[in-house]
Image (cartoon, rainbow, N blue to C red; front, side, top):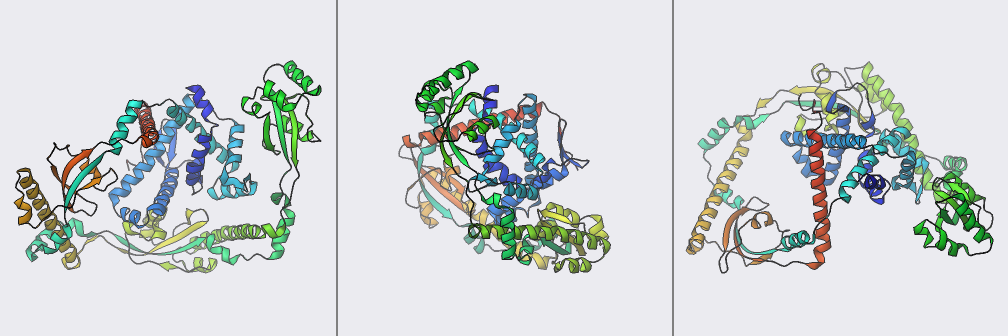
Length: 618
């Protein structure tokens, strides 16, 4: 397994994982993930401490990601304190799992070399322009994510080592044909059903609710009608994006930058090369060189003698190379060759002994200014806006501190308007104030009770805010007249659901006795029979029902996605199987088993590790 683990660190799978996971995670603002110092602890795994700042940054990133994917639906979920608590715990649990895997990888002695880190960075599309690594893009991306080149390399090393462990688990799992066939039969099974939908909303509309019932429900459930403590907030928001319009760039500036940085818009010389690799003694390589010097064809000798099997089949071809991406000794020899068709002497590298042939040369080229002008202008706008942002950030911090009882001076200093909200609570804060860091500042004693300006709070890279509390409204039970409509709606819904449920149970009881007239008496009719698959909205409940005997039906009451009661008649089960699905089913089954292996591994590591959650114990 150790060999598999070590081989996995340079595989394509790791690069794909890094491309799809790490950068959606890191460059949304996880720069502080590597920051240490004496900070409050969110969790501790052995000797590894996860600080509160680390957790809050990762939590905010995950929250932003979910918000972008689910929109208003996720916003509604965040209105439930229980969901927010569960969501925060799931993020912390994931960070603890990563720490456990890191510790295990360290115990196994897994390592990633500096050269592997370098090659991984060079191959990442996030740092490339026109398919090539671009140092300028790399530096900007790291700066905005809060990384130095060293800290990012260390973060990447940690993730690559962790993925060695993950790939080892995957490579040791397998599936049996019988398992795949059984799973295929289950997944492709279809069921024949008829349904009667009892619309809960219609029953609710017909429900009669008395004044006495309204008062009784309100008095018994006043805790459900408590308005939480609310605050009215004034704030100043400053972002680098908003400053771009204030950073006009002239054509002369573009031209000046182009002339000073032409190397960025020039391609390096490329060389197409082939090689013969000998892993044995230098004498063996000299013998092969002698054959070439005697006039034998390079491609034929490569196929016969090279020990680099993949390239040997292609006559030793390595394709096009440029400086800075391969072994230095190999590179120097390749670029010293003068004419196409020339071959080198024996060249020693970390991989063995090479003989290199030059098969093609592509001279360097420089893109004209007209072609890159828009790109340069966009870059300079970003740079000027970033410079202006950091300058104004300092000014904002100073003014907010010097005049702590008002935002007026701070707003004037950075030329932005003060925004004032209506009253809100922690569960329905405006989007601009909804991050945990901002809410923490708003509800701190200095801001809420003493009426002072907050410190400058970073929402995301180059996006900051300063808040102050203008007014506070205490928690209170809302009067009946304010919530009466809500009470009536709840009672009507409850009565409607109960009525629909009783009718559904009555229908099923009658059908099980063979009393079909019950349907007519209640003016109910089943739909035409239809076949459903596991993708149907009723599938979770229908596929749990017992298979009916021939000529009979199985009846049950289920709920649809609109919370309506549905009476289901299961008339038959069709076993299909689909040979075209075998490969997909095998892949899913393997993925499931791999996930089970990972879960079992984590459970074992947790059982043998000292883990504490100071954040959850507060």
